[in-house]
Length: 239
Image 1 (cartoon, rainbow, N blue to C red):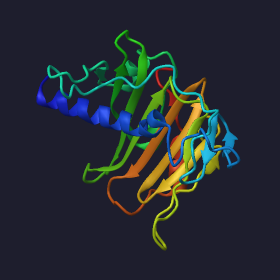
Image 2: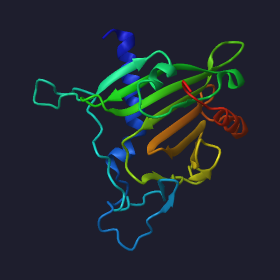
Image 3: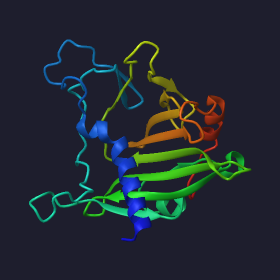
């Protein structure tokens, strides 16, 4: 694997496994067992909305298969062997033809977004664990990346999928409440960050996690009206 392919592999695995880190553990605060009598969140659109630090409800069904092992730490010394396979694609259309579910992308003509490429993580038998498409919006003048977006999709996920709000850890600190929204392909949930947004929705039993971040500023998010417009412009890739 050449250095460029290796960087692409590391970036894809970090992004996809990072987005799936919480559901892979499915633990925050106490475990669901022994948490009787405590509020178990709100079911909404295939998601379970939980307060910061709340336990995972016992009724959350774990994925049929665990996340594949992508890093061979300790290989040859008794460590785990990698089980995941990474496949990189030059275009979203190529990726869309390789997965058994629909993918969407912002309309390039109306939004100015372009696709950087796609990634697929497979189990050893060829089944899809997750896919990712990266979108970029560049400055018309400098050509520097202004907005970066990632759409990670998971056909095998906890159900209902748990999402936690984030409370500030200090006075006037950042928080990320769970906001129900209807401008996604189907109803879902939005969380705000310092420089962007995180969206979750489930369609046809596939979990989609969309991140949109302002690359030009670590503390200023894109205008929400613009983000809504970009999302509502989304077309089915290859459709």
